[in-house]
Image (cartoon, rainbow, N blue to C red; front, side):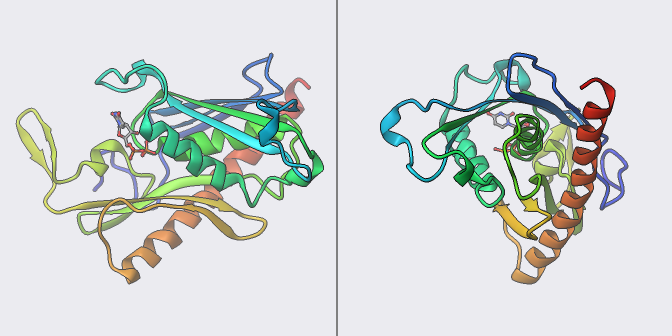
Length: 240
Ligand code: UDP
């Protein structure tokens, strides 16, 4: 049994809402369990500095930041090394999906902020960003959907929490949780092209085990995709 009593291939309770920041071209909030991301898009528009513009396509600038109050040990305000690395990974995750050639010489600014973190923040940020880009009218081959899968002790599980990530190290009320190691693999997937656009690995598993984890992750991304599509439909049906 998992700590939160989920089945091995079950996502945490997941909610999504499009159009949460009226001033942005597109915006969305995405929540998986206790991890919450908000994303806003500006553009396509003028790019700063101009010298980094590309004559045949838009340049996407990604900002990921985990807000100070999002974690138990206050995070230092402003992006640190980890935030920069994650920004780059999010940018790469969108590369096969966004049709940048439609807006040459422009910039698309994609901001993702973590309001609350309980692991999987890069995935939840991608899910929010995907919806924000869609609402902003940025053409994409498909929404990008993301979730982490992993091997926790001897179990293969979907949508890993912080407690699961810390399996084997986690102490609560002087009690140790878990014997063995934890490996987590964040995955992003573009369903229309069947491309995996983010694949990172923190831990140690065999090649066979990794294949199993990726398969489980893709299954999870497809479930996330359904939730994203519903959020977009709800937005356009309700008010706009
Ligand atoms: N975390 C934290 N403080 C930090 C960085 C991370 O408490 O400065 C926690 C947070 O819950 C985060 C988790 O550790 O979601 C896992 O972080 P990781 O760098 O593996 O990325 P993520 O799983 O969030 O994409």
